[in-house]
Length: 329
Picture 1 (cartoon, one colour):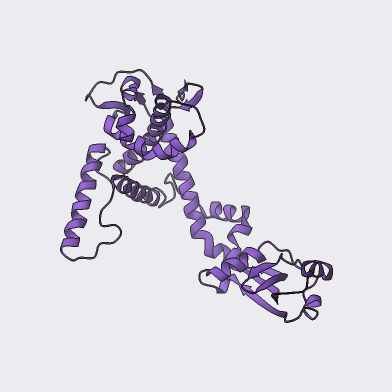
Picture 2 (cartoon, rainbow, N blue to C red):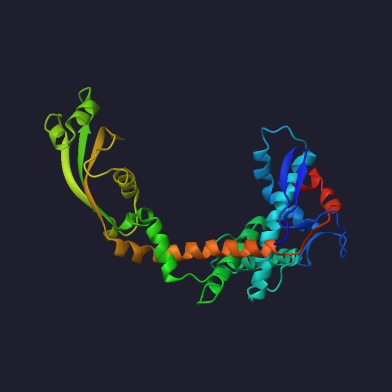
């Protein structure tokens, strides 16, 4: 693997991305500031990425005493790291027939054409799904997300593909974090004590001393004790009440009573009587989502490997020529 280059800038350690030949004067168009495997990164392209990242970097440096030049160098470094990964994604998409170009100028042309297509459709009274006009940043994110999804699908379609995930890998991931994946296949049996306001002082102490909600209910004026079950497997989608209920029950062990949950004109205590998990139902329900998460993880690793083995060159003088007005104007 090629060595990554690290530069020290005014006390800040900045990773310049995959191995870069810094200080090189690159042959080719005058606006070229870097290359990845011979594919140019233009000055406008770098400035575009710097503008995308500027709010994040400025927020990180808010409490740090650094000048504009240091901020710009850190911003350029972050932007180049983003470019290496995005350009590698575009090259991979081009190799797999998902895009015709990886050049920034062609991206700008696609953005303009897409906005014109949408504007023309609106003028004709046609339905336009999503926004009627993309900003450059929005269209870039949209395009990259589409290509990433297409690549993940294409490169994981069959055994032997670089992102292929086996059934055994899916099962292993499920078993490694069964509790997380089993929430919607868990059946909870619980008691619920609702006590209206105002209640006699010392309610929390009385609940704690009793240890069972049934032993508290009769002594509390207006209190209502009910028993119920919640079956995640039988529920299609979680509404707000289900989410709140699971947030409480999911933290309890059988026999344990929750802290009081405040409501309008009342407080509620929950006691978990028992829970059972249908592991087969949980696995069947979540296998697809687990597989996709593993594909995404493999894609990240696969892409990073391509970046790490790429031939990257940076013209540091050209990068340093970018000033504050180029980014924040």
